[in-house]
Length: 173
Image (cartoon, rainbow, N blue to C red; front, side, top):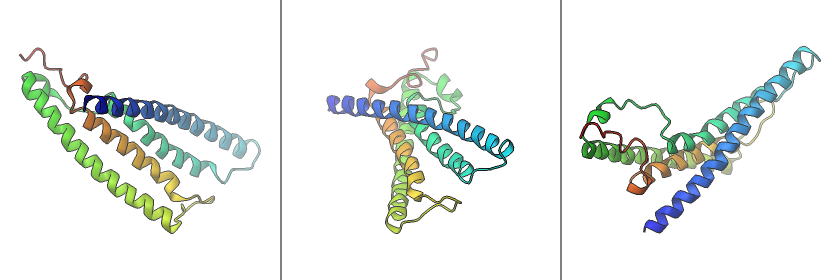
């Protein structure tokens, strides 16, 4: 069982690394497309038809590609004052409970998002834009980011994969 969890963690870490690189690349592409749009519009008097739509799609993709890394590193916003002052055993129970609840919520969101991806794909739904693209191309990043974040919350249940945040209340003992 421990080998399975370790292998899942390795795959999740690899996917998170690739997703982080893609998220950073997406942000760089957003900046480049904005610069291109400004130069094209104000220097050459020829605005693009695709730049603003691309920025919206790339921002969605980048945000959800970055989400697993934020979850992995516990870099999200958290108010932890009560857990920080609680005794270590209680703090661990609270963190495990939060991880289970978060996993269940994210799993439900993944299921809903996946159903929508499938609906968009099977019906051939396209974006409402000047240059339409299949909508599932954009929304599939939502499903991916939520799914990989859910995996990390599940991994936090294993003591081997608990990092900063699970053992924070040393001074309360």
